[in-house]
Amino acid sequence: MNNKSKLRLLATSWLLGACTGLLLSGGALAATTAQPATPWMSGFPPADDRLIRNSDRDYFAGDKLRWTVCHLRELFPSKVLHRGLGAPVNLDYQLDPAIAEVTFTPTGTDTPMSWDQAFDANHTDGVIVLHDGKVVYERYAGCLDEMGTHAAMSMTKSLTGLLAETLIAEGVLDEAALAGELIPELQGSAFGTATLRQILDMTTSLKFNEDYSGNFLDPDGDLWKYSTATSPMPQPESYQGPRSFFGYLQTVPADGAHGEAFAYKTINTDALGWIIARASGKSVSELLSERIWQRMGAEQSAYFTIDSIGTPFAGGGLNAGLRDLARIGQLMLNEGKFNGEQLVPAAAVRNIRQGGDPALFAKAGYTSMPNGSYRSMWWFYHNDNEAYAARGVHGQTIYIDPTARMVIVRLASHPKGANAHNDPTSLPAYQAVADYLTR
Image (tube, rainbow, N blue to C red):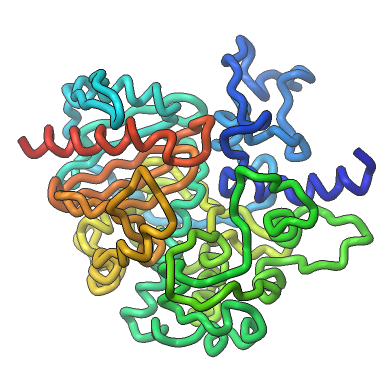
């Protein structure tokens, strides 16, 4: 590899791994290895064969993943999502040890599995269960503990969607408005003719290939161009392309008519982040801090990975603590209220909870969610409990079950990125715990 190629790989690696977990299953980069006797990055300095650098092609793969998901700000620039200066609001605890032994049958098998067995099977770094607002189960492993933060990956999208719905409920944004009206700089791109609602629900038609199973390191591919443009790392002198999320989004071409099918593409959320920032005068991280993180009494400040001009990665850059993400889940369960205070309009949460159009969703072919839909950057299962979730690759979820009055947050470092690999041992487990708590 020549020096130019090395620089380009360094410039793109932050997005292709750290922020959305794009080094998915099926290739050498995603191969699992046995946990070494000496942990990664241990020692002062670490041994040469225990080092992880942001320039490593595999820093977000194999057993390195389980270190990296808790240490992204040590590898890349970031922007704080401040919790404020007030005291945290303590969560109430009513732990139930019996949850560990709740059993279920994974999809496609006839062999029962316990909740604790699923914890290990899904490479879980932390999980917390709330019932009626009280913590009934909490466990940590891997790189995570009570004081740590973890990559939320694409769960970030759901919080960005919540901010947008808040501004819609408050009359600041109109979901029927065209993105080109809200952001004139987008008029020449595919986003220009898409409505805010189509961007929120990812029913836009964009010529952008987000297939990570293919050759996403192809310099002529969309993912390479996107991650190069939005990387905070130095670029070679010969690079003449866009150098920010704002710059890249203006170059996305259309691929047909909007509104005809659901198509999961992260750039929708980055466009949404721009719309939110322009309408509110604050970045996604600043608005999330001001409107939610500080007011809900978060235990920890969180952080966002950023591009070269400090723009937070609205589509996947959030890193946060387990308990604070549980607070977000409880906020959603309580229709925008937390600790007795209405933090976001109830109408915003109710609008999200309508769910999306299953017919449009079905065209995307998510086999582990046959009855699913997508609305406002949230995933809907349309099961008997009306459950919905924020989801991120490698096993991240905020699972909200209104019928069982239950919130589950799991942070994980599953070696295979696509959630289809953990859904068979996750979704039945969540339902089993819901049934146990409401028996």
